[in-house]
Amino acid sequence: MRRYLIKNITILILLLFIISLTVFAILFVLPGDPAQIILGINATPETLANLRAELGLDQPFWVQYGHWIGGLLTGHGSRSINYDMPVYDLIVSRLAVTGPLALMAIVFAVIISIPLGIYAAQHQNRPGDLIVMGFTQLGLATPEFWLGILLILIFAVKWRLFSAGGFPGWDVSFGGSLKALLLPAFALGVIRASIITRLTRSSMLEVLREDYIRTARAKGLKERTVVYVHGLKNALIPVLTILGLQLGQLLAGAIIIENVYYLPGLGRLVFQAIGQRDLPVVREIVVFMAAAVIIVNFFVDFTYAFIDPRFRKR
Image 1 (cartoon, rainbow, N blue to C red):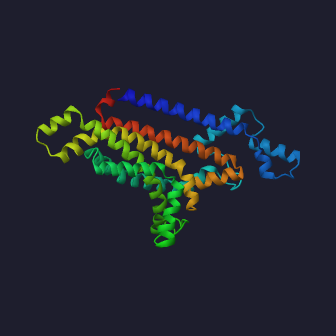
Image 2 (image 1 turned 30 degrees about the vertical axis):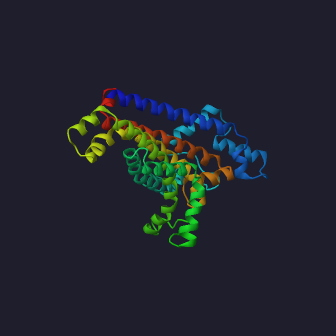
Image 3 (image 1 turned 180 degrees about the vertical axis):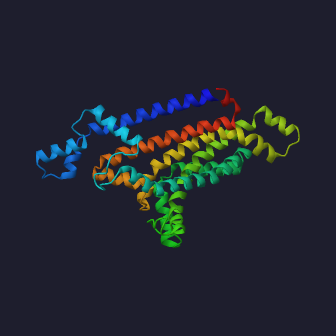
């Protein structure tokens, strides 16, 4: 178990280093001068040179990268050009929207997909299974933004049960903020549910054919006990992998849906930063999103040891 943990932590640190270096290098070679963006087109060459020196933009690549990564590790990263505040503070404030949105979407996805996947596996090649598979195929073919707009037309414009967009803030109205995230979270969750349903079905079908399942049935155990106690636990291992990937991807995938619902989250922030060429914000949000995917999957791998004892021996 210790060897398994050390190995995964080493891989985690190496991946984070590679991602941070790659993102910094890509944005480093992009055309555009942050000092020029800050001071405007009428700035004199002397003023630009002084600001570049103050920001450290006149230093070599590795020196700039070292200062930047050191700032990230100590919680003192870059400053936003347009907001004139630390990018770290911007990310934390916007994460208060994107984080709950992603968690709610995963909850919707799990609530929908796990029961449907188990049901489809128990009724393989029957009408119920075909209906579930048809639902998943429709979900995979539906763009998130289109489903989000459709939900607005039905629940906000026609039935007036939800607002068409906006976010009041957790400190202003907790219930109103939660309600504002329901439709976008459902739009994200339904699409993810299609993927997880298919995987749950295939994983359950494989597990239900194992010898120990036949033995459990031969002992006279109830089918519910066989499926949910003996089968589901082992079938969840590949499902957990996809859940980890989906949770990390939701942080990045929220860009479009947050713009559809006008939510002040990370997705909308990075979208605005790209349009305004606020490169420090783009750089640190991209690194944060990539790191979130890797870290979530690290914890998913670590969870395997508690579900499957075979992983503890690695």
